[in-house]
Figure 1 (tube, rainbow, N blue to C red):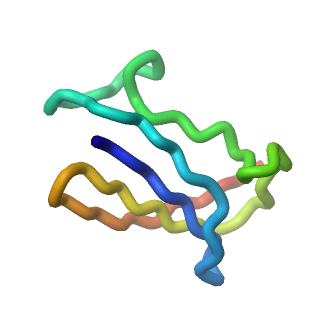
Figure 2 (cartoon, helix red, strand yellow; figure 1 turned 90 degrees about the horizontal axis):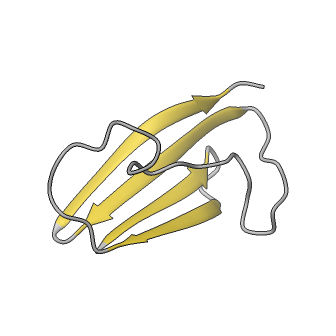
Amino acid sequence: MVRIEIYSASGQLVRTLELGLQSRGQYVNREKSAYWDGRNEFGESAASGSYLYMLKAGDVISTRKMVVVK
């Protein structure tokens, strides 16, 4: 089960992407990879700035930084 949580720089949860059961491998094209449309849980456009995303897949948890520029 794969889940991605996106947080603002202040630590507030912006969006959760539930990707469900995924097999191991590399997902490099948009059809199979995770894609965030830049909107929050209410469908509002997120502001430009720094965000953190946490990828949870089984026992693996990985956190990375990303920058949204509009």
